[in-house]
Length: 530
Image (tube, rainbow, N blue to C red; front, side, top):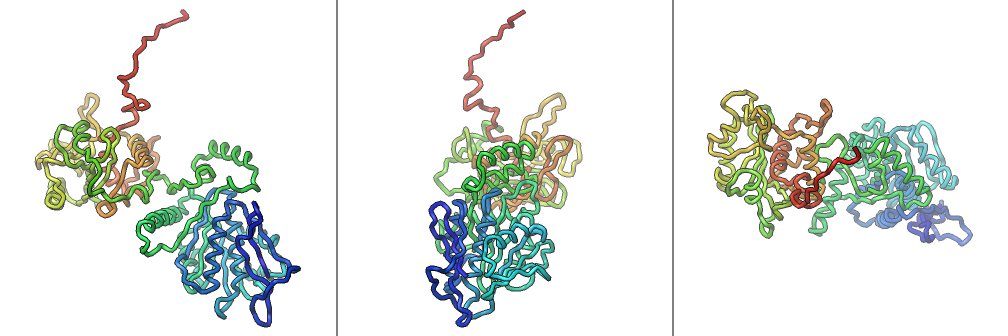
């Protein structure tokens, strides 16, 4: 009853489980040199996870305290996630058949449907000696190891069916295909004996809306790593992450993998990006997200108290109206239940390429005048946001209608002016109508995501909670060939931020490869050949 997981590169033993089982004393005794040991060889992509699991298994066996309940083993396809996680789970069942004379150790391996368990069945039937276990196919698929432990092969097709008692070592195979409820039910089962849940997952693509929860989990783990580095006494989330890459799998024909990746990018670019080993650390939230480049652990940062150069007044004056502006604010006008949305920002760093740091927000289900009164009441004293030092950039439709979409002499912009505030549209009016219009959403989102990618947009976590939620959740859709933001409760705070960014941030066309257009010499072209 012995199993060794070894590194294929140098035959180093990473995890050794079991020994010779004494059925009378119900314990492992020393092996003899002639005794056979089952050996599983692992690729380099599988080494880090297996080494960590060996330490967890030691602590579990000895009854030491443990602060990890979930291990996320994720990466591109053919990276060996399922293989390593499955044999680690089997090694745990072999090594600890029962915990401190308790009932036998229980393992679950969960697939999306029963049809998808064939891969796992083939692994255990082909690579684990058949005298280790008895295989049962009905009424459920399970492996009863001869010294007591049980490995059940379950389906997540009905998530609520996993709400069924204790499990000590739990493996989800391709959980990005499963509902979040299926994960939660199983996870609670590991709490009885402080066991472990392992998620052997592929990175979700934009199409995998079922796996949106997996992106949120990965993001929470990333945030926890950063927070833990700053505060060692912090209570941990209880999860660890291991990235797997098929580039380190020698069993794969690597030139063929690269050819397939190029073909897949032509056929389905979004899915190819999720399956691409070259982007092993690049996770994107599933669905048509407005803020594809948003990463909470990078972009949610407290506004610095001191030390950062404040260039708000300089940039706002150059790109807005001349004035001494302490802060800038974006506004979107609505009369629906999610109200008029306003977001406040400061511009920090280099005026030619500033960081736009959102530092406050204000929402009010009222008309424009009452909105401004409540804004002033809330921010004038503690923040110093007053009529003479706040430049508003508002929805261009506010220059010719009210928040109730009523056209006439009275507009949202005119109410701002009557109340003594300065407001301008995201871009100046063009054409004969004299009406300002908002930039195309496609163009706004391209700029927005480029600035997120370059970490030029940030959000204060304590003062912009709803804006952060909107940035994270807002979705887009295609309408008559153009991308638009889905009009729900998450749309309007993001729109307010987009207007502000469009007016104030340098755009790619403002410079050509870092040079002003005026730097180029103009050479006349003469017609030749006729």
